[in-house]
Image (cartoon, rainbow, N blue to C red; front, side, top):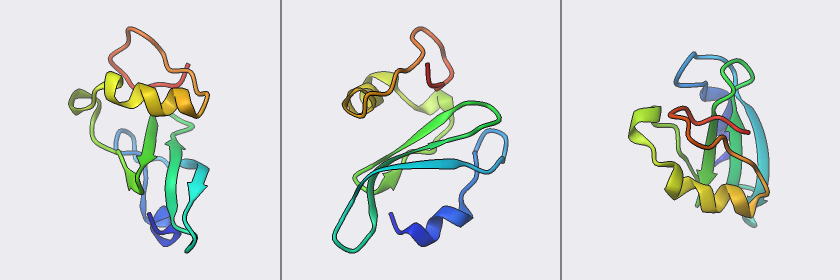
Length: 86
């Protein structure tokens, strides 16, 4: 994901500005792995293989995102329908 796209993104749930943690970049400075979080609704949106996963909650699966979040050492709320950090 190019860093120039960061300014164009907002939380799909409530349209607030997102905070970004970058975990890995490529040689050109593009983000390969990272995490957007919304300070308002507390939802998270991972960046995996350079692609931000910003689909609505009902179309996401925690089981698919859990391994990458565990790799980064991030806790997630268990048993909730919303995608919130623990």
